[in-house]
Length: 275
Figure 1: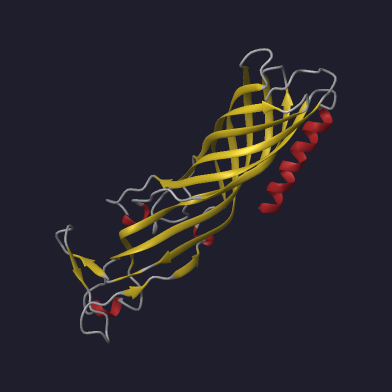
Figure 2: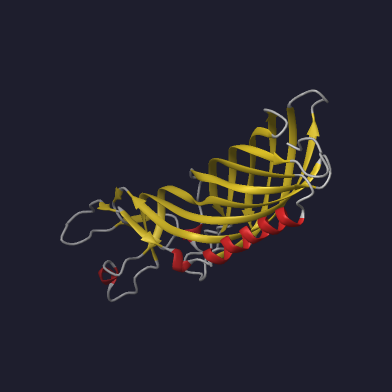
C-alpha cells in the first residue's frame, strides 16, 4: 500500500510537470510541527476511545504547484503527518488475562482503571490535492497572503500505543461512579504496578483514510523565482480508523504549523509569484 501511494504521487507530479511544461510551475518543500488529536469518542459506549488530548509530532513534505492564473493554482503533494492522541490521567484499559482469574467464579469486568500515561502514535503519508488562492499586499510588496483547501488520501505507515507510569489498579463499582482498589497477589495490600510498554497496533487499524486538508500562509519573495513561507492549518480524516469496536471508533485530525521554501520554474505564461 505504501509503495502504491508513493508511485501514485510521483506519477501525478510527473504528469503535472510534463503536460503543463509550457506553464509556470512551482516546486516546494516544508516541515514543521503537527498537533494531532483523536476525536469521536463516546465514553458511554466505550471508555477506551474517549478523553484524548493533543500530542506533539512532526509534519513535512514536498509538492508541485501548477499556476492556472496569477492568483489561482492547483497543487499535488506528498506529506508525512504524525497523528494520534494522548491520555495522562485516571483511565480505563482492558482487563489483562493475568488479572481476570482474580474475579472467579464471577466474570471479570471488561475494563479496569488506573492513573498512567497512554499515547497513541500513528504515522500517515498524505497525498493532498489543493486549490490555492493568493492575495497581494500591494504591487511592490514582497509579502503575499494565500489560502489552500482540498481533499487528501492517507496511508497508514506505522501505529503504536506507548504507555508509561505506575499506578494501583481499580475496579468500577456497580454504581458506575466509585472505584475499589484491587489487591494483586502476592501483595496483601493495593500496590502500584508498572505500565511501561510499547504495543504495535497497526493491525488493529485501517490502512487507508481520506479527508480534508487546508491552511493559510504568508510568503516572502526572496527574488523572482524563490520564496520562503510559513503556513498554519490542519487536516481531518472522514473515516474511523479502528477495524473493530473493541477499542471504540475515532477520527484522526491535527493542527499543523510549517515553514518552507518554494522555487518557481517560469513557463510560457510568466505569471508573477503566486506565493
